[in-house]
Length: 332
Image (cartoon, rainbow, N blue to C red):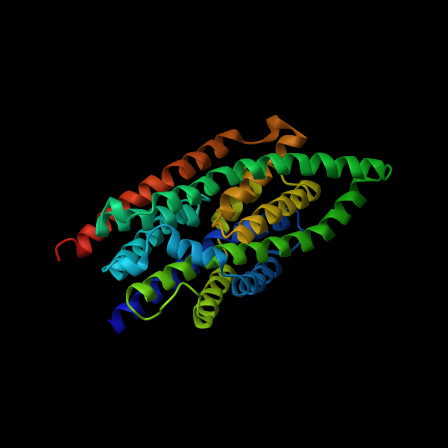
């Protein structure tokens, strides 16, 4: 049993590590593309602030660990978590390889649902909790798009109100502001995303009778935060390329507006204990600010491919996790 929980923790930390380099682009793509920060400095900053954000919160972890299924009443919870993590890691690696900014949150939630169904049946899935989380994942990109649009309109109005300034000076000022906004976004990424792996570990600890409640032990926080920070330090350059260049040409002003929008949405989700997709929120913010500049300037072909991946991730992850569970544990 001890060996089993060690394997699960290792898989969860591997997922967090992959999540770190898979989602690095989300926090730093705008700052790198406008040259507000060099790639090396941006990644180092993101890694440090991912770590800080991850250790300061636990509401999302408790929600992920207890809202989709009840680890106190599932006898094979450790097997379920094993299948969940294998499925989520597989989908993350597939989408990373092809440079598609898919959602680690979607694949983890979908994988957990699929593994619960495979291992404990449909009745074991808490549909109310699952639907609440999925609703948050679906609505947050729309909120990010709308707020990003309004944010840039407001910022452009304020710049105009302050008087005519040369484009060069405006860009320099917003590059400086981007350093702050990219830092806030990195912190928000760690605060929301790292907690998902924490929740999965706590689920396994409770199911295996290693822990008595849904609180997150400090060693789990430190391990998950460190794993994500290490993954972030590597960077996901294929995804950075997609987010920073292929959707729209990002200028310092709309880059700052995108970062600020994403931070507001992600921090709101973290405060509510909702696991949001940083990928979807940040990308939707970029699209929203881009639409405020010029609707036709957005590469809607790339956006369409990304949205398709977003739509299929949860059902595909449910299917993968179901199959993984049956292949590994179905014969017991």
